[in-house]
Image (cartoon, rainbow, N blue to C red; front, side, top):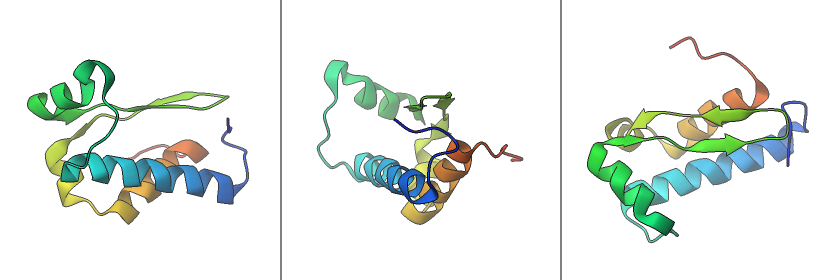
Length: 90
């Protein structure tokens, strides 16, 4: 587990993996989906993942349209910013 004070390289690696997984889901690649929650989120049009850290929980609510419009690099930067504790202004 990590905290917002963990080394940047560790947080960046985790953010990259999260973004890679989100984009893989968006492309329709097979992922583990117990209970069909990911499939249900695709039907609703909203994806709401939760990132668990030692010092906080981060819940992201993003439309699948926005996921498809956003690059993997941009998603990783956004997730990293949230993990480090920066507030989202948009």
